[in-house]
Figure 1 (cartoon, rainbow, N blue to C red):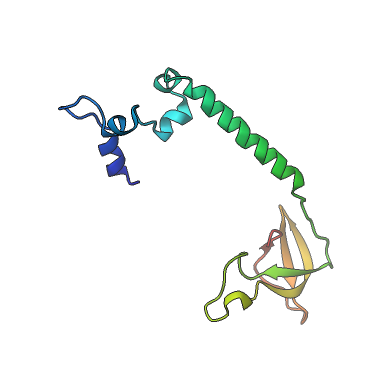
Figure 2: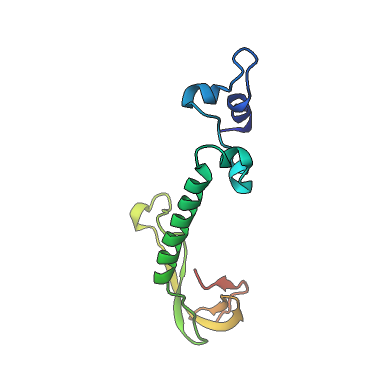
Length: 135
C-alpha cells in the first residue's frame, strides 16, 4: 500500500468523525511506527501489546530453533571449492532448469578474514575480486 492510500484510510473524515479503516474493521489502524515504539494508544486497545509481544517471542523462538541447525563452514588454504553462479531457484533464459548453479573447481588461495576468500582457478590464475564464503 502506498503512502497516499495509507493516509486516506487512516485519516478521520469530517462527516463521520471516524476513519474509513475503523468503519470497515471496527477499530483504528495500527501503523508500523506505533508498533515499534509501543504507543499508549495501542497499549490500551484490548491487550494488543501483549499479543504483539507473544508474536515477537514466537518469532524469536523459531529463529533460535532454525539457527541451531545452521552449521557455519570455514575453508582452509588449499581446499578445493565450487563457486555459486546463480542464487538457488533462479534460471538463465534458454537453459531453464538446466541453468548452471555452480562453477569451478577453485582452490582457496588466501583467507582474507570475515568469511572472505581469494580463489585461484585450475590454470593458476588468481581472481582479483574476493568472494564471500557463503557463495
